[in-house]
Structure formats: C-alpha cells, structure tokens
Length: 299
Image (tube, one colour):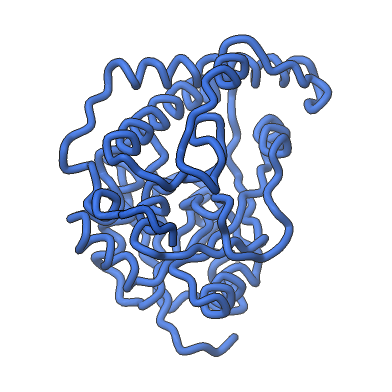
C-alpha cells in the first residue's frame, strides 16, 4: 500500500446497477485503497448531487473521492489522484472516462482530453465519476453558498461542472490527471436520445445560473461557454449549425447508423436546451454567493 498522510473517503452514488460489485472489487485492488467506502443508494432518484452531499456528511476523510457505480478504475487510480492533488496543492484532481460503449467511445473521441498531467485551465477535470477533492474546499463552498453540490439539478446532470465552476470562483485550482476509469454504460438508441434531451435541459439550467450570477469564469470551453480563458460568451451561430443542421463528420464513426444516431442526439440536445431555457426556473438560492462575491480576478 502506498503511504501518505491522508484519510480518504470514497463515495459511490448508486441506483443499484449490477456493475456496482465490479466497481467495489476494483477499489479493493487499488495500490492505495480508500480508508472508507460509502455507497449511497438512491432508489427514488433524488439525483447524484443529493447522494454526493449525503456521502460527504457521512465521510470522515480529509480527501473525498467520487466514482460512479458503472465505472471500473485502474489499480493506480486513487494513488495518482492523491499524488496530483498534493503535488500541485490543488483543491481537486480528476480524470477522464474510457467508454466501452461503441457509440459513446466515438463521440468522446471527437474531442479527446489531454494526455498530460497539468493544472487544469481548460475544464478537463470535473466529471463526478473520476474525481477527488480536499474536504476543506468543499466546506468553503458550503459556507459561502449554503450548499455543497446543487441538489436543484436533480436528474438533469451538470451538477459536477457547476461545483467545479464555483470552486474556481473561490480561488480553488483543479488538476487534470490522465488516468481514465472504464465506463461500463451501454446505450440503446432510446436511452441515448433520452439522455441527450435531458443533458440539454441540464446545460440550460446551468447556463441560466451562470447568466444570473454574472460570472466572468467559463466552466469549460464549449459553444455555450466560449473560450475558457475569457469571460463566457456563447457562439450562437456555431451552436445553431451544430445542433440544428450539422455536423457531418460521418468519417469519425464506424458506421452510418452510429453517425446518424449521434446526429439525431445533437438535435435532441439542442431541443432540450431550448426547452430548458423556456421552462426551467432557477430558484434564488441556486445563485451562488461565491460567484456573486467574485470581483474579476481569476484564480
């Protein structure tokens, strides 16, 4: 076992997928095992943010790591995250997913993440299935905003990226560690299209929070947030092309069936975004004080 001075709590939100046991086996085989594993069952689908918050309240560690119940980490996963958070004095450290589903794999390959460990200024780190935080920074956000992960997202997703976005406003830095965890999710066409629509709504909810908070930090580089090194500025014409007409890069997919499924998913994600802008209401308590208090000096 690798020695360090930390107590590490590992939290797994679960809807009791069959893959949970595979995840637990892989965690027991870590070169640096977690000091405690907290499995949070969410049978009524209150959302990952609720499960993560409940896990944090139960945890004893000074480092809090998260993984999903359909993910399998490599043996050195936790060791490398801990090493990076210490090496850079960062508030958190995270890595990518390696998709096992053919469609998801080729979608992710369209925008591959970095292969180098680095202080993360590009928004690579933030996926809640492969991440670790210092508890002190989680408590800082709770003190500033009155909440840890934002439970208003419920099943919409994007709560992980919203958490890191607030962390940056408080002065926290993130480290990207190119240690992927294997993602076992299998998508049917129906489940993929439903997820894309829901993801669009989640992005819209986050977008409305960001706009009402007048944030000067982009969560990550995208058509909605613009350049991650500048104030958020949406590229609406490019987004309209991507979500309403294109893209037409069928050469990036192994079959035309996969490409057209991806293409339709882009349309449904765009529709979900518009639907979210028109119908979702952002409660006042969701506008974080950590962002309101920000005065323009980027951490």
